[in-house]
Length: 178
Image (cartoon, rainbow, N blue to C red; front, top):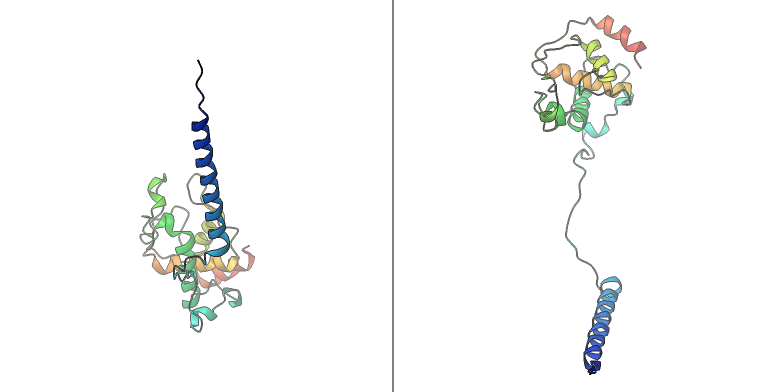
């Protein structure tokens, strides 16, 4: 009653062996013989500055008083802002960054400058260092002190609501700031 199905098994085994031989040969070709594909990509770090420019030579660590207004410090602060702050505060600091849309309360519009923690370099430095409890403004105390001052300098350069800190007060505060 039972029929022999030997021809079906033999055909399946031949197909299996052929498939495995093909896969094995293809694998050897890809790994050992094929030279690869040259895509012609030139990967460039977007935050890197071209060699030989004044910006490339600037090192924030060499600035003895980063709290004093300086174009190079502001430019360094702008780079830090673009990398670390623009996601929430927006590229121009108007509080319209893509990540800020989902935050409650919304990120501060730094251009308008309706400050809740006080205005001026000292207040801004404290906010950058400590964040604002109960909001999405995180602490950036892990940044070097000079980098935090650079951020403060940049914020001061874009805001319309400037603080009234006296340079002596800022200098005295800066000497104790960590």
